[in-house]
Image 1 (tube, rainbow, N blue to C red):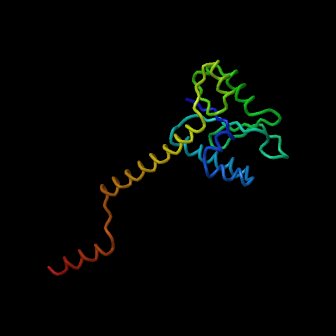
Image 2 (cartoon, rainbow, N blue to C red):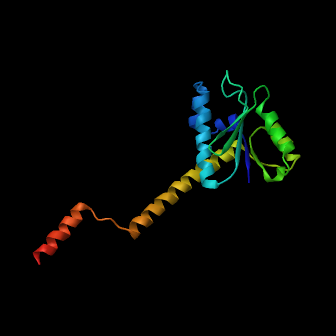
Image 3 (cartoon, rainbow, N blue to C red):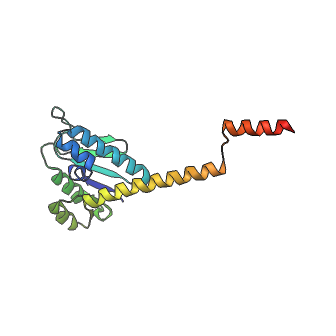
Length: 167
């Protein structure tokens, strides 16, 4: 199920990114969110579109770009809310799209088209839980692989060589 994400609304739901925003590190916070979403996308294999308010950079009129497999949009002179509404309005099957936002106006609008909604707070929890589960799964796979292919240290090899030489 494709995700359409209200970028700045979600940034403030991750404490590390929120801190960057308060320190006026907009580009770092935006890049941090996109990195989290790239990792999430690798695990969940879902299409992601992120919409940010304004421009990517004060001097650049970029309206969109691709970061990994994530489609990123900048609203320029419009609001991100406006672009999100336009994406849903023009979507051939909006019922298949989940919009990640806590903005009540957007939620009210997308509900008219049957699009699904996850609040930014809930989605941040889902992302963090997904990462934790993925790391745990990786650890279990590593332990399982080590049991299947146990490794012997140099010290153990030396011990066994000495033991067999005595006989």
